[in-house]
Length: 488
Length: 65
Image 1 (cartoon, each protein chain N blue to C red):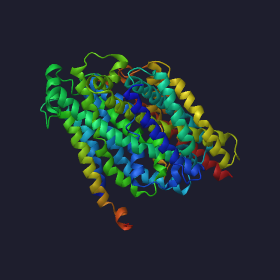
Image 2 (cartoon, rainbow over the protein chains, first blue to last red; image 1 turned 90 degrees about the horizontal axis):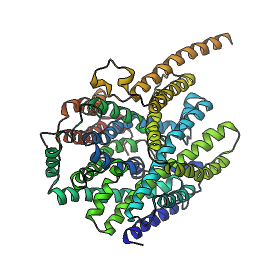
Image 3 (cartoon, rainbow over the protein chains, first blue to last red; image 1 turned 60 degrees about the vertical axis):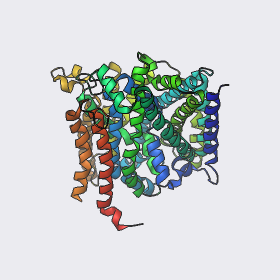
Image 4 (spheres, rainbow over the protein chains, first blue to last red; image 1 turned 180 degrees about the vertical axis):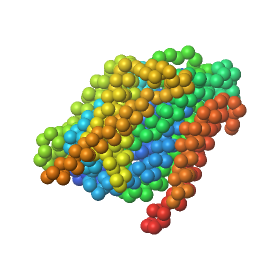
């Protein structure tokens, strides 16, 4: 056992200890397990909302994108800002409604708003299909980081299994409280490790951050801005907009909002969350520092740029710290997704199919679905290459399709009914799925468009289709409903 | 009340519209490529804007803690 591995396991044990201890003094019914009794203050809500941004994707993918694509990576820093601005109005409204009706999941929200358990089942299935690949990618990243940081002494599979078992244990025991407590450790680690590396590497390798960027510009002119084709300006703008709209539609972010003690917490967080995003800047610096230091990485190894450059530069102890941080960035979001997916399956799918199941039994069922969801995701994470990434991209587009129905339902005069909401989501989901699997781009569908628009994110089209179907079907069925009322 | 919404729309303009004009590497500002500087500046401004919105929002004044 080397030093790095000892450090990683020490942090894993600490996280597990905190996660399990978080239960203390709480009777873990559904209300406590899923939303922490709606008693979390500014700090915990901040950590749940902000902490989930720093997933293994940002840790590895953020630096990997900077390394491999350059300028387009900056989209990761941009969409959060816009999502936080919207959150100032969106989250308090969602929270108020959720508290009033004692909601436990995003699907509950749709069930209540549109008075339809069927819509709840549908939304739940979309949510689970979107979440499982997301979880699988966390496990995959975890395996990669820990295995690499252990200098290969444990295999990615073994590392993923250890991570999965740990997270399953504390989610089953402590629910969202476990996630909140492990998020504390995680965020401290991310801040320290990422900022330290992001400053140290440019200075050590290039003599400064400005010097690093000048050097890259000299060797690869234009790499640090958006290219004319592909990840162009129109791609950037449409992707930032779509991701910002979809941001809080991820079922686990949506549910995290339920755990707040009062609505002012969200408004305050809308001020601080944008600043916290700047940590991503240092993630980019790490990726850029790797460009001239370890050039020529390709394929999956691009995502390991951060680890490879670190192993060249640092002692095993520091590599262990980096590995532990990577482990935690997978565990925290992973734990919340696990809990949310299990709750949704137990309450909104099973509960809808066999009505009359009491809340205690639902709570028990939700807890025993945790290892099932974990195993399925673990299996997915071991499927190599393209499949999982494709599903993840699909997942992002899928949850964005919930945005129109969710947001409009918060308006005082919502003209959308359950049929319209269902049809809109179904049409959007179908468009996204077809396009993702067929690999179509906007330029292929509408070849007459100028090049500048051809790179527009296809999700925008799906959102339009969704919106049109929602309005069309609402008007059609709404008219019918009124007529029936009159004849009755 | 109105001012609040105008302010909140600024980050959208700055990032979604502004980036078309800011998409360049040079000049470097504070050592950052211009586009990155532009985005970072808007991240900082968003935080300031939301702080102002928070103060303007009548909902926050009524029930002072």
